[in-house]
Amino acid sequence: SLESGLLRALRRAPSALVLVNYHMTIAGQPPFGGHFSPLGAFHAPTRRFLVLDCWPDTAPCWIDSDALITAMRAVDSESGLSRGWLEIDAGSETGSISKFISISE
Image 1 (cartoon, rainbow, N blue to C red):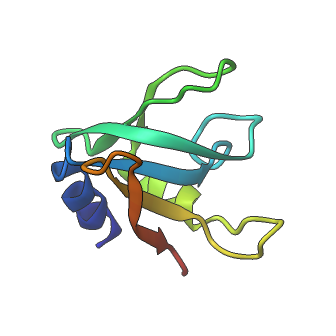
Image 2: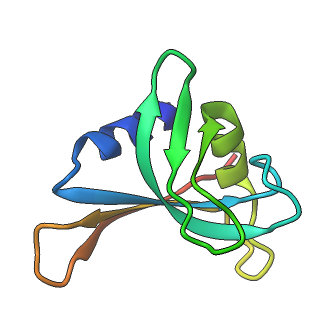
Image 3: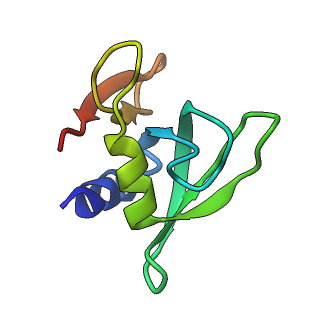
């Protein structure tokens, strides 16, 4: 499942970082659109991910797993592709993308 894929990626911390590309309004953060943010944690009892938003107009928040995955499935209006997540290898000096997961229906 997509949730388990995100969890596997998070478990690689601190040797890897996870950035999600999601549509903020669909995730419950209106009136904003597409956005990249790092993931910080997962709270299993409530199935919520901690999105460490660094944009000045928003704050870090806990987003329901299903809502986040639905927001990552949203199609980007410029590229015509679904959103997804990046795993960034933090083990190198410059960091490198180790995986990009684009989510399609």
